Image 1 (cartoon, helix red, strand yellow):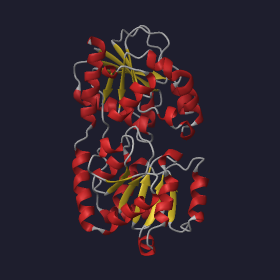
Image 2 (cartoon, helix red, strand yellow; image 1 turned 135 degrees about the vertical axis):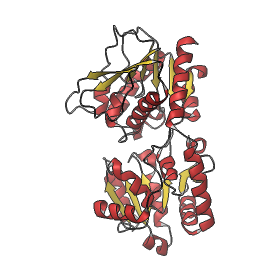
Image 3 (cartoon, helix red, strand yellow; image 1 turned 180 degrees about the vertical axis):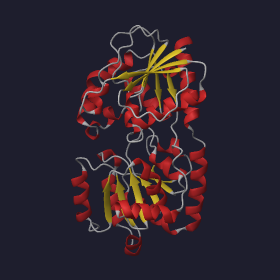
Image 4 (spheres, helix red, strand yellow; image 1 turned 60 degrees about the horizontal axis):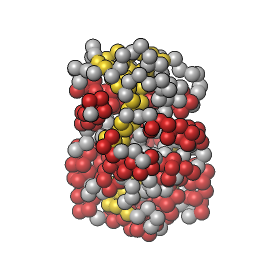
Length: 374
């Protein structure tokens, strides 16, 4: 096969979910496949740290200076005269070519814009509403990241299930247990964080239920709050003011810390320093941060909705995201009961190690073959 992949999102790898997915997909295919030929459409200023084998050819695409991500990838690559057997657009199909001269496959991570449109960025929501039905209708197969998302896609777009392929994601190799003393020194120096904290990592969208997390934290006994601050890490975005106000409303403004964006090379230290990781999201297509936390040996609490039970299985304490009292109780339980903590750590290691990007690459190759050959 000659496989074309729109790899432009890899420029943002490890900074966004789609960027991480695209980077790790092409990296895993490079690891496992010596037979098929690949044509990767990549940004001209892409910092390439993958040593591609001879069956990989990179075609550089000019960037639109200072243009937002969705505006850049919404411009299709030209695949005429490439003799491709299949062309893959990983960023939810955005940027699928108009002219079709080979089978198309997209990775559609979720259908959140249909279910919670108020939680999606304006530009992506506009593209989704305008183009996604056409994108799906013109795709010969769809790859997605969970069985939950597969069911959503089939129902929301009336798309045949036998043409939807599930490839679970995985944590990256940088996420592993590290020396706590060294980690705390780095995190304290760069972000002025305390030695013990409860951690949330992810987007600041309302669907992430950060308000619920702050409310649940405020209900904890004072001795727990004194010992464990709440760290809410991620690019602050337009919802930050809402969350900051919430800390004042619930009298925890001195206990809740918003360090902002954490550089990728510091993320393993951030996880390793935490006492507990909490993921209270209302809706996820996959939900990678809990798996990253587990790989670092950190106990995890997660909401029990959408894809989370499928992805995490028995490796976390689950709660109903609307139930603030239940979340607060689970946090106290996970911090104070050593048997529960140890059990979660062991189960977390087992769960995170069962997922690998090379397996995702193998399942993607299977999808390519099924789409081309039936």
